Amino acid sequence: MNKGRLIVFSAPSGCGKGTMLSEILKDERFCCSVSATTRKPREGEIDGVNYYFLEKEDFEQRIADGKFLEYACYCDNYYGTLISEVDDRINAGKNVILEIEVQGAMKIREIRPDALFIFIAPPSVQELRRRLHKRGTEADEVIEKRVAEAEKELSFSSKYDYVIVNDALEDAISDFFAVIRAEELKVS
Ligand code: 5GP
Image 1 (cartoon, protein in one colour):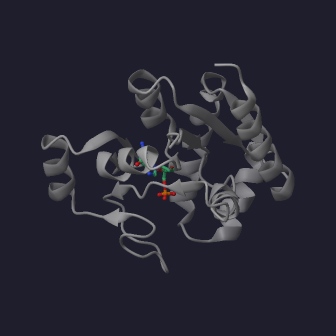
Image 2: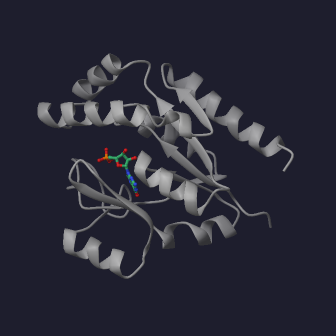
Image 3: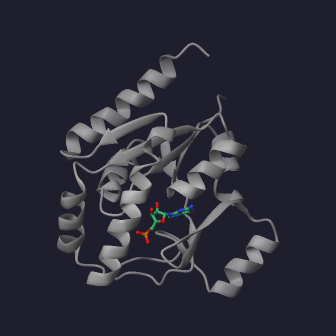
């Protein structure tokens, strides 16, 4: 059986990446790694589905035990990809998507150069702020922190293999599948 691919999928908070992913995951060739985080669950988020929600000490113990492929600190919380979420699925032929921020993505670039790196950008920073307010899951000062973080992250987009602007959802999804198809057809 052919191995699957590791796909790194980064987007600043509020770029519509969650909606894009739920569409992409309808295709059985893809699955998403469930990350661990020390962030508190948002309403409706389920442990083991959206994230493994861990206490800081537990997260740090797993770092010490070498359980993470990568981890990063983002807006005062740890986020990390567990090795156990990735390799078995790739060996079983699945394309495993890591939905991670840029620091973690750059670490994966070093250790897994064969991964595919896709950055999702908002049409503009103003639109990003508007979407975060509309989502209403964070307080105003957290939104401003996330917008500032997004501006920093946007400057990393040139380090990815592809940048997809998520203006209209359907177009962004068809761009994603166009990228996958192009990669499948690439002469290796
Ligand atoms: P949120 O708190 O909105 O769920 O996620 C905040 C940021 O953390 C997002 O940019 C998301 O992509 C990133 N993130 C989620 N899981 C991981 C992970 O395992 N590793 C890293 N480096 N970033 C992650």
